[in-house]
Image (tube, rainbow, N blue to C red):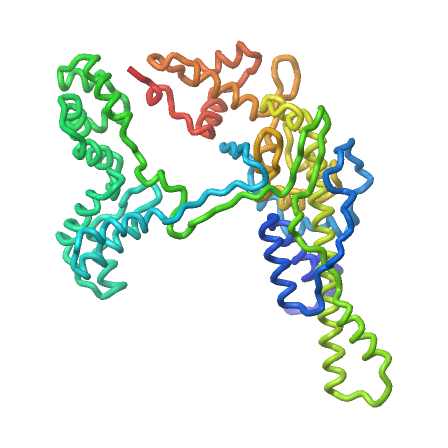
Length: 483
């Protein structure tokens, strides 16, 4: 049975302008500068302000956060655009610290692949073999490994470039690449990588033994089953220690000397905020000095005013001109308002983070970081959780102690034996300290680490210890054992 029915439904939808405003929050200082330059080129009704008044808000002391300055409902009602499921996690394992002021640059004159191709050209290969070598080098990953087998490379060359290259020829070119610098380049895995490096060194009894161990006992070696190696080869513990010293000198990732690939020849971190500690007082600045101040073009404003006051019969061309000018002016006004709102949102959100993590900004001690989640910042600054998430994503702050991503300041909490709430980041720091100072000949198991942290007043389950250890990229006890 088909019937018609009327229903009342209340639904919030964002306007295109609001959606654009939300997207602009995600941009960092370099990206917003490019976005402004793009808008200046595309919209003739938008101009730069030539005489910029001094900004009284820049480099100002950070006082107690004023929650009454929260944005309007229109500013903060962005939750429908991003659900909490889309919000990225804040359990980071990196510490992006640096003592360099303002910008951090990492660049080089040529990429890793270009460096290899320059060496391959010295081999005087035929044009076809060089093209094969070029394709192989293009498939080498940033660690320096060639993880695809020759058969797959042969198929790719046939389908993509129409080159019928036999597998033996590909293997021959791959061997030539193994002769390039750095040693170990183009290996299929860690075992071959280490062997290639040892085979290029001058032969000694220790290196001969190391090659034999890697060839015949690599599985036991990678699992640190040293007793099995000693029994299998009937060698002393001293001989094995000498072998380990030799292998430790090798590079397991020969491509790691280059911090960029062909696709990323230069990367740059530009802090979006600056928080400085001077004589025990915090000073905050939104780092967008190079961002131009904007205004609506006077020429276009006068043009619209002239059209509106003009007398006489309207025609299609005049109407079209008025519509064009008005559209460009409206777009310029919206863009200027969006930039201002973005700055206000960034400023208030960062001030809330500073207020919560004041002790860290004053001391730089990681142990002074307080537990903080998106909701805490949201409640303090008055913005929606999704807005705080977008502000925190891909943004950096420069402090006296280094440059940190805003995600660094977010962590969950737990309660110690004294009933105090502490950050999980502090627990991870203690865990790492325990592992760093352990006896490496008898490393502590997760159960032992539970007891060690309990002595310090933190009652944590073994599975939680295991989770934190994995997040810190620390292997299990057996793989941390040294002889």
